[in-house]
Length: 285
Image (cartoon, rainbow, N blue to C red):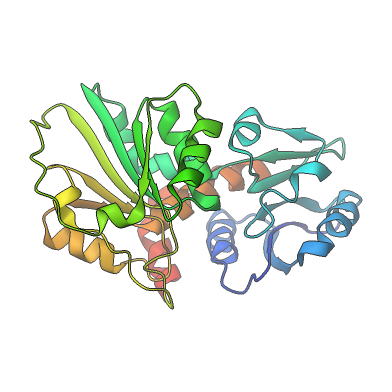
């Protein structure tokens, strides 16, 4: 019998940490399967999915940029969350040969925040910086947790349109990303009983990119600062946040969380999350 496998597709793909994550878990659990990386160019998406449909050993794939929306017309089914977000990052090859699209970015993003979101709050607010593909899942995830969102982008009109599309009934706000770069003398009210999170959903701060310009006078006391950039995991924004006394969450938390959801769908097994610290060391090597 041919060895079962899953993979990640994208263009480019060499930078993906998914093979290291899934390979680590497969090894820990002793599962006889593998996880690969496959370079798929935009014009190759239809033929790639057509070929994989007929391969019984293929369990599915993760989808990274720029294919998260392009794969959708070629699937048989969309999970409701993926349909609402308008992006697919996990495709599962079902036993009947059909393809189902999921979005595990949203639950992966929320995973490190769950202990706090399990509590009751008087008010919940998120300041999200960035309006690209990653922001879609983050906005949908936050809105589902009754969090008021201030979405900042270089084009506030695009930010407004994204909010209206993903949570049309929400009382959210769109601003220019430059707003957060300059100091403010705004006096925050008592934040006891409130939940505040600041999210960098942009590539700013990634290796080779300029840092995200954010002045921490815009951060309410007690805020969590969450940066989804994974290279480096400890970004300038997170370093500045810790120096200012804020709690932080790095991009590996979301990356590992979304991978765990996909792993269960591919291999019908729960990944060994008690080994997360060891996994992080592998990813940092």
